[in-house]
Image (cartoon, rainbow, N blue to C red; front, side, top):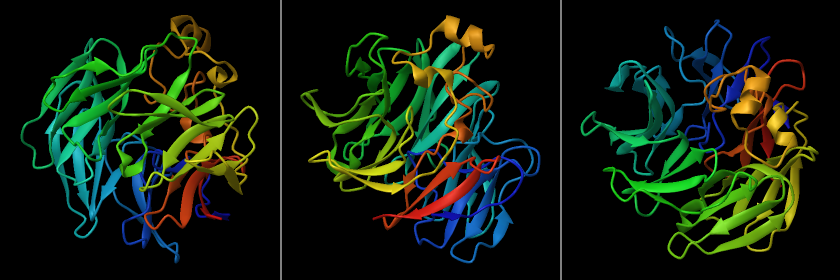
Length: 341
């Protein structure tokens, strides 16, 4: 376990669904508030030479997604691209007055999708990286974590907040359907694709890691423990996860057997009152926390599901030999690295 940043501000790698390493393993892209607003920085590895990549208006702190030499991210209602090879930045799509969530490219890097809220309308925005074909797909509740299917990129899986949680829609806006009907007392979270298998994996907090067959919707249990944020490797054979209540560390889980190996103990504070419960937060929970009825991705000071930078959010490097994660064990959130067993 190695601490990579040391600045008295919030510093964290990206969200657990995306690797913070560049594909060549030569650098880590992370978010830092050291200039006063969340901006992207590059940290060479293993030299740890620091350079600032973005400036100006605040970016969405968990929106960065890396594909080749490009970093896609969100600033307000715009989807942006940063070129790591030239330093050039451009706006791909602009939705005036909207608040966009984290952006997700398809595996080929041709299409992008992001959660969106524009006035009273909620849903997703989707379009091509070249700036064409962008459109709004409406949904009646808050949307988070949209992701393209790795084998069928015309499909997008996304989360509705609160229950029922798991949905899919084609990128043209057709075929909207709920993948799993459940009530608020079944706390399904952090669903993602099980690598390139085409199936889904999710947690039922705080008890289970489960797998869902994309075609039949059959659900099976992988492991019984308090796995929290989960991210599979590309082959779908291993699942990386952190834990909470109690925090027993970051684990690497075998997707076939459910057996697990300890990676490290991040000792992050893992804040958020809702994680002590086994149900989603409703309006009364947000009101009690005085945060307003917002998704946990929309504010860094939310005490219902965060602050998010107090959560480890482990993610693989591209060679799957290392992981990055966040810990505020020193009093400020910092970027850490660990080797996999």
